[in-house]
Image (cartoon, rainbow, N blue to C red; front, top):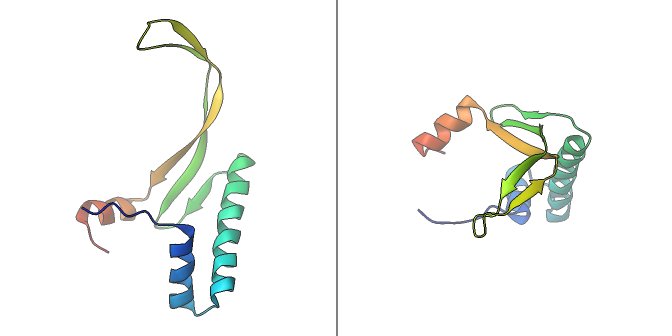
Length: 99
């Protein structure tokens, strides 16, 4: 399996080819969508993209962790973490390896 990373430029290039916008407009559209998604998540909203998945935030409480090398206890502060739950269609597509 090849290890290729999909980048913003790859997305913009796909929009350029599929939709027919100019390269600059395509890049601007991709940036705008990603900015809107990240703004919504930063505001604490859940982002659901049909047939793809759901991005949501989860609150993690404070706890005591341990340094694996020394065994020293280290306090871990409370924080919000981003979670992604893929849709059933995405799970089936990935597990089947189909496009």
